[in-house]
Image (cartoon, rainbow, N blue to C red; front, side):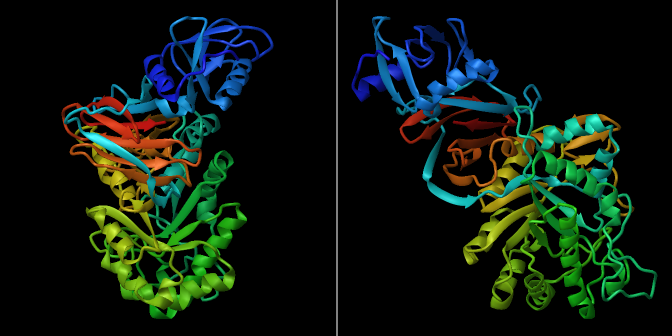
Length: 535
């Protein structure tokens, strides 16, 4: 390739001036001279003298473009059109920022916008600034997603095969039109978003089954397991958390699906119940990555529900569940608590016990009460233990201010050490059903509303999509500063991409700049809106 060698300083200047107007002659790419002109990068070269958008290029054009992209060498016209200046390696991945937007007025819904270019980092006065520091790293990511309740699976299972296939691909796939869900929560037995209550070992009044000979996953085999198998065909690496809402009635102090406690004499049997659940799901090809011991252990008024105090959970873990998992070779993580952000002392009191601590991976939190800063309190007390955000609803009752749940849940949880975020729940019908009698949330929308074979997308879909689509498992959170009025969180992906999610929950548009080392991007975010930037 012929080019005019220049100093690095001159090359950088040329890059900033000619970022969007490239002209290049190369005689060697496919054996014959060719001239190309581009209005933006990345390049994909067609057989004509023009440059196409890479994502829309033909297969032949992609191959040719990839040869150039892998070299990461870009040229800019400088003065004489017959001479070219080398503007440096890595100029595409470092200088062009793709971004997606969701606005409160729904004029943009996770919609890709025109790319923006980084420029030289210059003093911009008092413009709010988000400074990115990729060298300061925090927790790694397990994934992002929703609860797949029995009711959700029922609605999906009853769709026509082709319509269900399209929906699952959109939710769990990794294509340009998919949102890439990578984490799911299943109920162990029924939750309050089933159309009826059950456990895996239901008996007639007065009966007991200490050997769990009548244990059966038959209820899940109707809809949850078939839907899970279709999901795994799309994303075989998805992580799954299992959470019980109640033990079988015969193990409980009140013999009732609502409230009560686990009787002392059934602690060891209940530990085996968890083992059999994990083993049974494994036989169906479903790997349970983690379990919580009790959904909302303080909430004994839901249907189903069961109270599980911290001192009881501590005793159950160290004397029964931990040893049972070890004996059976169960690798599923044990996660404490699984309730609101107003009681960090619950998991801390358990982790303080060394005999329980050794079996515990981390603690799970909801956000119906309290602040996500409670998660950092647990992290500060036990920095070697993980944090998980296991439930919160994101619904639009009076408006569509997507920035509110993005800031409070997604950004709040991940900036407070959570390795995941799970929203409640993935699907409901137009009446926010199914749910149990005297249970469930009659105002809780699903991420999608399923009406027969018709699907509509709700606030939670876009709230989650702004992170699940762009931040895959094994990404790492990195430092990003917090200017007033612009909540944000940043990640570095395994592919080396930087992802920044910014929420503006105010009514007015906000101008700001993003500074990544020595480069600056100036942009504006609408009020009540969320943007995801990736470079």
